[in-house]
Length: 90
Image (tube, rainbow, N blue to C red; front, side, top):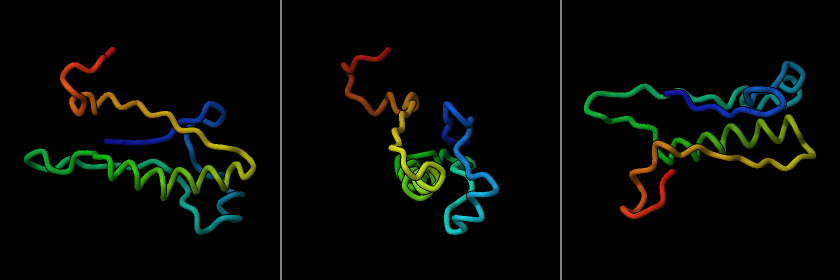
């Protein structure tokens, strides 16, 4: 499974070579991989997403765009079954 952040301006959220030199403590890419394990263990869960956003996406975005406000939109189609039975689904 791959989880990544796409930007309207630059495609994927990552630092360029200049920003890597300026911010060596910031991760280079926000992309994360998860390999599925036997017996359905190891599914991508909310904790993985929170780690990715807090420790990768936000620091990269702030280094890349220091005077901007970041807004993240998520496609949660894999979480539909987490809703109540009568929830409106499109």
